[in-house]
Image (cartoon, rainbow, N blue to C red; front, side, top):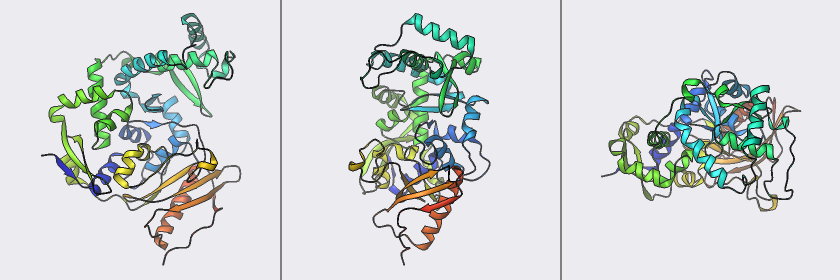
Length: 394
């Protein structure tokens, strides 16, 4: 019989697997955080702090923005590539990412975006410049867009750099003001990892197992979407032959319904060891891994959320960049916050409590403390409520 996981335990397992069950304190050792998560998504938008910084800060409040690039560029503890989006991953995962280079190279060759990618000779000329001059960003090249007016039109040099980066021929050396610098992979990736060739099936096994381990329990679709480095058929095949590595489970949703899934073989031990998460209130990023899979989020927490920064303002239900508020294992609200680094102010633009959640004085005190900590991440000294601040419930 499948192991049954009630909704409360399911929420707690998921938060524990994603590093949100314990207080975000201690020495800011970044690599174990990224390793536990599997990867951290990168994003260009900076409203308070860019998503990758915020995601790590949510797991350790002593994290500060320069630390990630130092780990990527100087210590070479991370490499950058594409999961479901641009992300950083632990460098030790590199041998298990070889098939992803091949998959994305093939995918890009078939896409309209890369239909006009420069040929081998032009790409070799770019490679030679990087070999001779060192890491270069797109700003070091001056080719122009050939077909103006087309969506996603890019200059030839940008197409070539992206193509070689997706294929693993170039690697991210470092970033300056979030601008990516490309270098030869052999000058970025340690030689032993670059030469460590793993069979394709070994990589699939690792990717599926590592995804399930970090999810705690999952449907086949959730395993597939975790890295976006295997397809649905490969996940199905892996589950069919994983044998003692997985356990069938039934998981209860927030609405009381049950659904089938799979869990790691040690799910019994995990359930026996699960503790209530910290009661601390956290401001989470819209791209936090706990938020990213909206269907899983709604199923487990009953929390409906969507990213609206690309929705026309008149059609937004909430706001441009809205932060979910997590307290313990429950989402208690959401708010729109914007940092003004020039004035050193964190501005609260809007606040929405979740239906049925009573905002007592103690809950407001928790939010004020978290806002003060969040302000420090953005080098802000003051928190200002631009919108009306609701009164505490009696």
